[in-house]
Image (cartoon, rainbow, N blue to C red; front, side):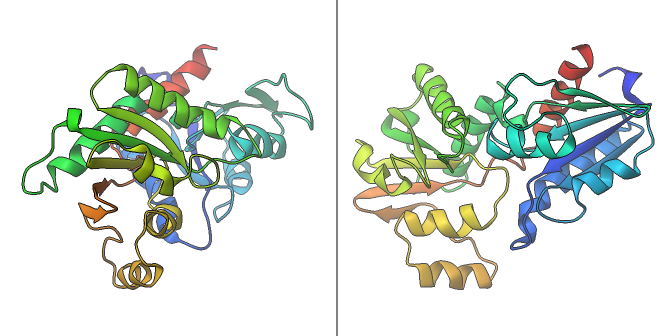
Amino acid sequence: MSSGFRDAALVLLGHGTTLNSESAAPVYQHAKELRNRGEFKEVREGFWKQPPQVKDVLSEIRTRRIFIVPIFISEGYFSEQIIPLELGFRKPDETDWSRRLVRADQLWFYCNPVGTHPKMQEVLLRRASEVVQNNPFPRPPQSRDTTLFIAGHGTEQNENSRKIIENQAESIRSLDVYAAVHAIFMEEEPQIGNCYELAQTRNVVIVPFFVSDGLNTREDIPVMLGEPERLVRQRLQAGQPTWRNPTEKKGKLVWYSNSVGSEPCLVDVILERVKEQSEG
């Protein structure tokens, strides 16, 4: 990236939660790396559901240009409806809205979320490969003998939440690397627990397409996959992984990876999102 952003501020926008401190970790990780690179005048973290609130962060910045990059997976309910409405980029029921907003003497840019960037396919494949290579049993299975599942949240509030998961599954399926590739969801069909019926192979790899390793991925999904809730909570309280790789369930060997949000290459995705908006 050129030096043309040294007069601009970058705000990494996370969802956040007051229930789990790990939810914010990827935002802080990438903000720290971007500050170290020195390509912006300042880099700040802001959240929707926890302090520092993004509106408070934006009110403190004095630079003329501000780029806001949502560290979200999909162009969904919060990232494309609720937050742009609250920040003033769009009006209620408005479908055609601008990602540029003039505020007094400032120009705000609301970038596309990181999760919809084409590079996320590379991130998902890397996660799937790493979890098997790092946990052989006793040797890593061949990908052609493995079914890959991309796990998403899903919500009826916005169809884009589901669409990005399905698009990634379809894209990876077209590469013909795995025996099969499926999208599964926490709140929609096919549900995460259906993976055992969907998989025609003994080996199963599940990659959660979530930003953070929060309660959804560390507690809810392992329970949906069949781990006893009591055991999951014991491991969680002890600071242990809540899923042991691989675990045998219903005749399948199941590897379950970390979420995608902490992948270092997401910094490059963030920078590309900024460049897209700056070039208009």
